[in-house]
Image 1 (tube, helix red, strand yellow):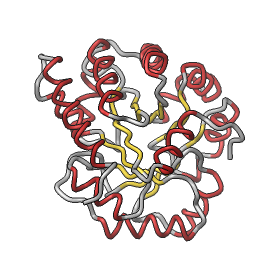
Image 2 (image 1 turned 135 degrees about the vertical axis):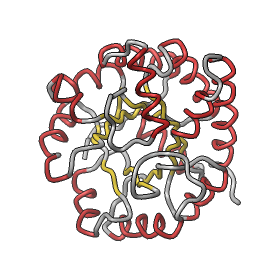
Image 3 (image 1 turned 120 degrees about the vertical axis):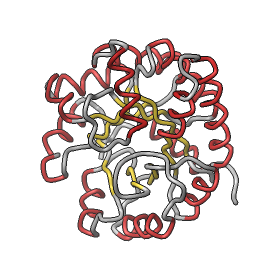
Image 4 (image 1 turned 90 degrees about the horizontal axis):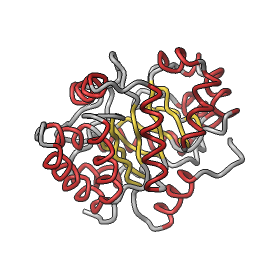
Length: 275
């Protein structure tokens, strides 16, 4: 575990001490264009985000559904490179003093080189990184490079994660555990499988995982947030539904940001209340 306590660690601990769920909206950096992304990030902070999970735009994101894929393509079409994305994230972090967790695919790390990539992450204020497409068995060099740069490596767990996998997460994970509320890709869903999410949370706790457990994949409604609480998780990550609210109004970015803010605020309020 990292000896240095990050801003992300502090914000997640503050949420827990207040007996509420942490709320992390997910956005694709540069979607739908640089100015619109900056507006969206500001709206998420104002809606009550404890931190932001941000995704580097990638042309073939295997863990993401059609809403995030479309966001990736909009950002890439707007000219967002990895370096431009870093500049935008630095701007957001500086303006709002908001912790950032980055979701990235390994190809983008490989292009830069792991050491240089994570050093750049630390320089712009990124506290944690989840590499979505690298199995645990191949993750050790990546996690080592992240820790060397002072960046916390985040582990992903799902309903199919075994007790042995949970023990591995206890040993190598930092910042938080991303608990997939369903098996598959990201995207809006009608219900949350509270029982399977609860079983996953229990499995992680039985393995003595003490990190915050944040649920994601498919959360879009107030009742989903309440289901996450009932399952025993510590927070929620919401992406596709918020991005979709913005995208439905394009090219009117002001209307899109306003719609995304309304949903994010509603979900943020739900993290503070019980059903």
